[in-house]
Image (tube, rainbow, N blue to C red; front, side, top):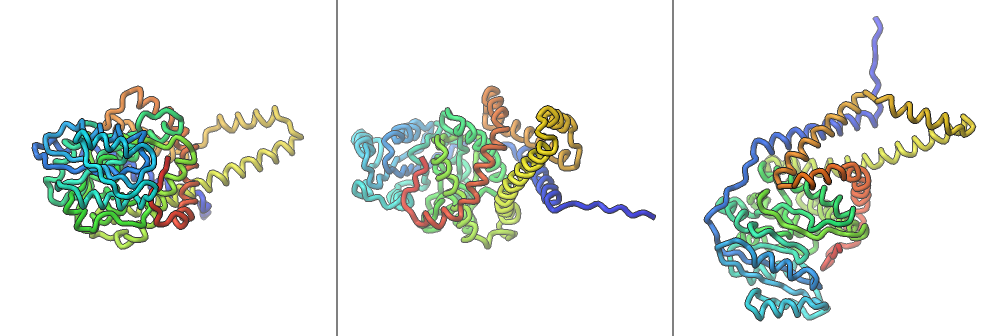
Length: 425
């Protein structure tokens, strides 16, 4: 009797595990998105909302942010608190004019050139806010006119502490901005799905609404973190609150236009994730926190390692192929005609290994998921086609950049610890 043994090398084994993991996630997300696809209907519940806009040298953006709040289709009372943290540009002049017309409350937190940070601006705004619900809006962001009306209904459930809009990139022009637009489409859709299963643990500064009592109950935003919006989410979840999101509420933010700005933004986000996962490690694999503890947080950790591993694997394959190409050229006395013909033959002979099949399945599922969720956020056919055309670049160039940013992030976290205003662009 002849026994046959199948030997799988380590890299192949890890790749198989990653493909199965990605396929499982794709199927799970598709199932949840179809099963729980309805957003909360618009409610007649319209309590007062205090909008806090932290300002530091934002003369180019502040007008659009304030205007988007003033144009809200919302019957409840709205107050706008612009908290200036010592701007040295024309921001204060603009805010004084809005205050003179009675549109905002202009709060001068510090003297010009003496900023103490965004977090302290937010906490001061919370302290001075008149209403029971707090909206946080960054100066470089705007919200559509129905955001308040679409989100406020979630708060009829006393367990809801936060409601967040989805985010789109504001007028993407450069290739880098367009790649980020694809990323935002995907990530916001996933966050909506996580909201449906009680696994959302992210807030942001693009029109997120908080229950004021909940914010005060956890002591407000914490100083000394790279990502105060992530930290406040975990603090609220720890206290028993849940976070909801709506496809019908859309905000827009300015994306980094240059590689350096993108680098600063992403390593800050990544380092903020690292530090908060360390602070809240007791949530990981803890059934008390449901899908968040058992599934979502572990996926974020595993996903980071997968990204770095894949970058290393790609680098290994590139170096290996270069080595074999140089060897083949040397052995054939640099016969380029033969070399090119061999490359063409290799390309035409499709690999039908299990890795190729699993990769194809994962890709098909992703395309289906991306199409279905893009329609949910009302992407036009033209926008959808553009997104599909950008996917190859997104999964190569942008993926490599993101993996490099992950590797650098721990060093950035140590370097930028407890800084004030961390401008990304």
